[in-house]
Length: 213
Ligand code: GRF
Image 1 (cartoon, rainbow, N blue to C red):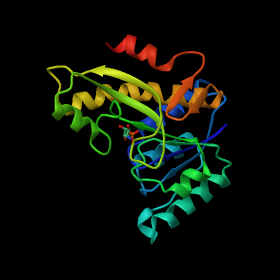
Image 2 (cartoon, protein in one colour; image 1 turned 180 degrees about the vertical axis):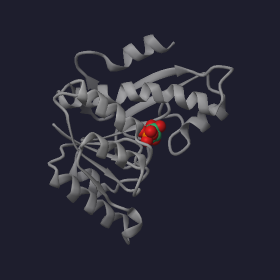
Image 3 (tube, helix red, strand yellow; image 1 turned 30 degrees about the horizontal axis):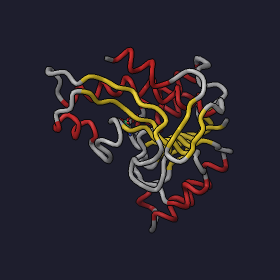
Image 4 (tube, rainbow, N blue to C red; image 1 turned 90 degrees about the vertical axis):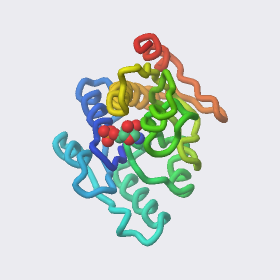
């Protein structure tokens, strides 16, 4: 299954996917292309280093969201992408984009949804004073971080934490969870029925919960 990764930032989740692919842990998923909307971002550099084809589409060069998304779809299609992974992609996608990849767009979010959607999720969780947080991989729908949940990993929030240490602890779990989900989707083990997502075989979320608490 050809995977297209979209990113805007430093690309550590992309790096986790690259590492998993190099170890054969992503099979039968294959990283076909990386697309970024921020010229010169870390994710682009990581794709280049790994020898993965990439493209840059600067959203600022487009008059409308629709135009930007149409160009995104075209670029992904050119690389025969079947599964789109949002790995720190800081743009909301239009219904037309999602219709082009039905149930084939996944996002990683650094909180336990439905708590703390949107930006600065780790800061929201830390400020709220929750005792556990974590990350969520979900299918993308037309809302912001509202799509059906595929897997979650939990981390404790310690009294000694600050926002940065919590962010780092969550990120470690993100790097484990995202490749595991991509592999499961590519293996055809993930099915969606309304809001209910079922993952056959190894229970992705259970291992993390046992390891983290
Ligand atoms: C991650 O925390 C991810 O959950 C969020 O954006 C961040 C991207 O980090 N959606 P990186 O670019 O993968 O390092």
